[in-house]
Length: 396
Image (cartoon, rainbow, N blue to C red; front, side, top):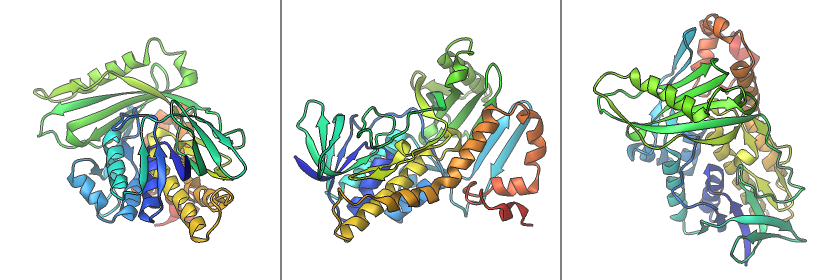
């Protein structure tokens, strides 16, 4: 079976690529190894890039998803390293909000919007075993199904085992983070919406606890530690998370009932990586296979959707110029993505150094965050928008 464009993976990156192609009237195929809606361990707090990407797809879409209860806007968050310091950060409601939402709901909303264009061959439960390059196309070997020929493969598989071939250069995963999360639901309509709470832990080992409010009274509570620190943990990561959850529940006022919606579940997440090769003859890499940042930043889904949008624009441009999809190369996509996300990568590396390596963090942060310049920087709707601009820190 011959297809011009095949997208492997239906996460935010793959679906965003497909949505912009569909908006431009370009047919394509999306392959997904899972069934929908699917649960995700992490990625339920989104930075401003998600809001703006949704608006570029359809101007009214963010407001519609908020009214439908799929997304919740927030204009504040809280960083803390108890008992040493706590940093409440808020910004104007006129600015771009952070968005909170269950990944299963967001992915399903993206998919339903995509299928409304009637330009997508949607194939869930389809696992790609291998991808082989020919002279003018790729052959995708599908588990238990006929092979597919494609002129262009968009690899949006994230951490999946699918490999295009040795030329693609998807990097091996380093700097790994072991992440465990649990969903809670609070039965109390009077409980005010809480800000995102990011807590840096030092005992018994360096770790990060993220408490993320979701629509419908749900909470995603996640705990992340580095793989190399895991061997020093006395006990199981899930047990530690359960103890921390019990402590959080004990802090709630009496009369509020909390339900554990599932058992703790985990995944391996990157602290940060950036692929040296993002495109080539007949292939493009998007999403976490292309770039990943420390999950504490909340920029993972936004970066994935941004990469999908830029990849789609490069494909649309190639079709408009009547280029052969296999031979196009898509170097414009690679260069535009590097320009777009370089600040996020550097910010992620510095945050990781502070999070896990700086033993002085707990004692010096109270003095650092009181600086008017630092407060002004933290209160930007996108905290890395001026990260590489030295003049930003010296404005009055």
